[in-house]
Each structure stands twice: as C-alpha cells, then as structure tokens.
Amino acid sequence: MEHTPRGLAPSTRILLTIAAAVVALAGLHAARGVFGPIALGAVIVIIVLPLRAPLVARGWPSWVANTAVIVAAYLILAVLLAMLVFAGIQFGHLVAEYLDDLRRTVDDLADRLTDLGVTSSAADDATQWLDPSTLVSLGTKISGTAASVAGAFFFVLAYVIFMAVDAARYSNARGLFGATRGVVIDRATAFNDGVRRYFVVNATFGAIVAAVDGLALWLLGVPAPAVWAILAFVTNFIPNIGFVLGLVPPAVLAVVVGGWPLALAVVAVYCVVNVVLQVLVQPKFVADTVSLSLTLSFASVVFWTFVIGPLGAILAIPLTLLFRTLVLEPDPGAGWLRWLSGDPAARDLERGPEM
Image 1 (cartoon, one colour):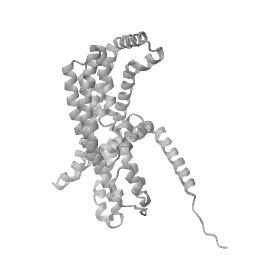
Image 2 (cartoon, helix red, strand yellow):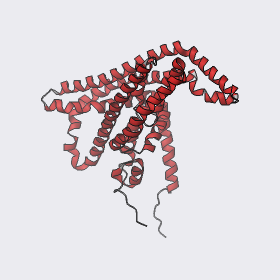
Image 3 (cartoon, one colour):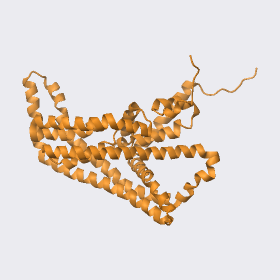
Image 4 (spheres, helix red, strand yellow):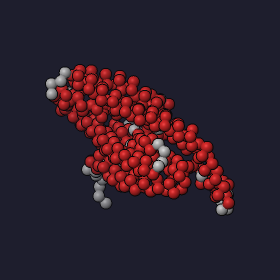
C-alpha cells in the first residue's frame, strides 16, 4: 500500500503559528527601546520621501534632493521633539505648583462621598481618576515618548543616508522587475501611500482640534493651555481612545483651579469639539485612507502599546498595516482575514461556495 506524505494538521499549524508569533513579539518587546525609534524613523522617512522625485525631475542634483529629504525629516522630528520637551517642562511646573491643591481636592471629595454613605473603598475608586499619580503617569509617558523621538534622530540620520545612496536604484525597481515582481512593488507602494495619507489626515485633524481646544481652555482660564493643546495634537494620533487621554489632565486641573463648574465646562468643550471631529468625522476619513476596521484600530493601539511602549500607540496603525502587507496580502487564502481587517479590496479574492 502506497502512502502519500501528509502535511501538518490544521490544529498543529495554528499552535506553531501562535508559538512563533509569541516568540517574535517577545523579542520585539525586549528590544522595544531600539525598535520603537527605528520604526518612528522609518515612518518619518516614508512621509518625506516623495519630496525627492519632483526635485530630481526639475534637474536638481541627486545629492541636493537627498539632502532636502534629510532636512525635511529632521524638521519634523525637531518640531515634534520641541513640542514634547516644552510640554514636559511646563507639565513639571504644573505638577509642582498644584500637587498639594490636587491632593486636598481628592481628600475633600473622598470625605464628601463618605459622608453620603459611600464606603471608603468605593470612595477611593471614585476619586482614583483625580489622584496625583494620574498626572505623574502622564508626565512619565510624555518623557518616554520624547526620549524615543530623540533616539529616532540618530536612526533617521543613518536610515536616510542609506536611503539616499540606494534611492536611485530603488526608483528603477518597477522598470527592472515590474514584469516579475510587480505585485510586490505594488504592495510596498500601497503601504507607503497609506502611511502618508494616514498621518496627513491625522495631522490635519490634530492641528484643528489642538487649536480649538487650546483657545477654549485659554478663554476658560485653565492654566497652561498650550500644554493641553500639544497633548490634544499628539493624542489625536492614537485611534479611538486618544480623546479620553487628552481630556483627563486638563479636566483634573480644572477641578483644582476652578472647581466642578470649570471642569464640567472643559468636559463640555472637549465633548463638542473632540467627539464631533475625532469620533464622528475623522474615523471616516481614516477608514477610507487605510481601510482598517474601527475594532482593529482600537485593538491595535492596546496591542502595540503593550509590545513597544507608549510610542506604539502612535505607530499602531502603520505597524498594523505593515503586518497586513507582509503576512496577509501575499497569502491568497487570507482574503477573508483581510476583509475582516477592513480591506474592501479583499472581498473578491476569496469566494466560498454559496449555500
């Protein structure tokens, strides 16, 4: 009797895939201090790379066009780093100035809840969002992100130099290998375009939200409105939950300096401005830009933040797009997974028998 070789059972393949994914993600987590800045540097390069082609087309020397790309990348990082450093310094001053007042506010609120018959543990849970450690934790995250951006300066420098050397060769890839590797080149091009459009959309909405929030906080008399405007801009790059992260610190500070009426006014402003723009309008533009479902966008923030730290929240969408480009798109049998992820182009790739 002739035996034909059989592949691994589906359950075995699934277990091996999960095991390999766990090992790979554990390695990324262990190397997050290196991987995070490299990923940020790569994203910055992807954003500014299109500047090179029109300059070369106008007759500029290749080295001048490459220098323009380097300068543009460093300008973006310099502005981002300057904003984070400014916000971190001002935030430290705020914590030092209002920490005692915040503690008294927390204690007074806990006492009032206890007088109303609320148990001590329940009162502590209710006032936890006002705890000073909330602000300290935010400051730590801002400092960590600033450190990652500073580290990205060096990685971008090396990355762009290597890119400048190979840019001319890579630009001819479609002409040389389009007939045999056209699909791969198309995937890489689509990924780069998606990342650029995503950050353009988020930067545009973030600037609008930051300007409106900062002006409103200034009119309401909340201290350091520029800090909270910067926070609103940065958290706008965090899908779905960025609104909450940007709201809590100024609302907590408003309780301290102006009581609950001022805090409610801050919450009302953020709900009107941020919910309309970030929750109702922006997700539609983002979904059309990168074709990711809202559920996957939210889950990716939690996942990549766990893997590589606070910077993962900002890079969650590009990293998820990269995974889909490298793992799902080359697999002809993964059309349904691509469709579940929000890719409308995948619905025609795999059709099962109609029941």
